[in-house]
Length: 337
Ligand code: 5AD
Ligand code: FES
Image (tube, rainbow, N blue to C red; front, top):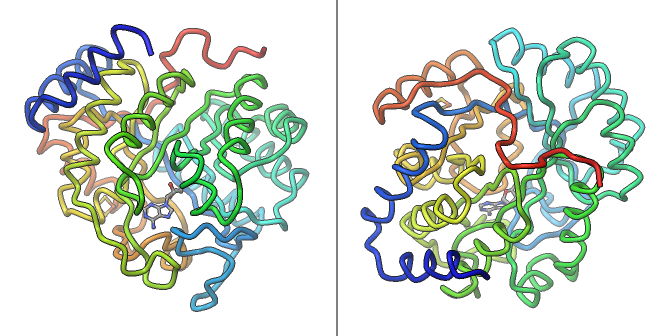
């Protein structure tokens, strides 16, 4: 941690939430203006081989329907987002073995050939460096993989025995393959402390991420963490501001989890320093089965309706929506090592 980072952390620890938000928002406006970048989120498979204790679609939960969009359906969803004017797509899935790298690369290539100027982000878990290379060659531009918590002991416990190092290695591989890389963490996991939160934010800064996604942990009733305490949104808002102050250029979404915990959660995250929104463009019938946590919003609103809703919500906090690709502002982003 350098001196500037230390000063920022000290400020974070002493400032009130609104003061912190004011400073982070001012910095955000200076760097990113008053626009909010849109990323179309397509959740294309909830079939998962893993058993993370916090996650509602873990392999051990049999109380809901599994789905997988076929490659043609996934292409159609991306074309729908494209037709709505969006130029940044995030294809997210659980760790689904059916979607081999060859299958995924073929879909990526087909989407890129239909929408060449759109930026394509994948969020499909840990793969080998060679697989990341293959997906990059097929046309993927960016990759999202949250480290979830930087506490190694807590990570291993909540991720059913998988170590933090696995995700950190994957993040390193992604960077070396020339991706714009996003990571992040949940706020308020059972067993974390104030120090864990600060370490999480510092790790994001040290990793030199292009994008950071955070949101409140929301206990899911069909997981081992059912009944864990729900931490209020304020902690997420404070973390948003800390991240913005540590990483002025980073792309920081106001996440659905925040909007699910508090009806104004995304607006509050924007006012605390976030600059991105990820409207859900998953085909409506599938959405109700991608419940990582309960109470998830936007389950019934088709693309256009959701965009209209976001436009009005953002007007309310003095922001305009941007349909641009929104590439990384970090120096050297996307350079191959
Ligand atoms: N509450 C909030 N966020 C969750 N995620 C997974 N489970 C939950 C939960 N119960 C987050 C993880 C994951 C992202 C896609 O969703 O951080 O990386
Ligand atoms: Fe999706 Fe309001 S943001 S319906």
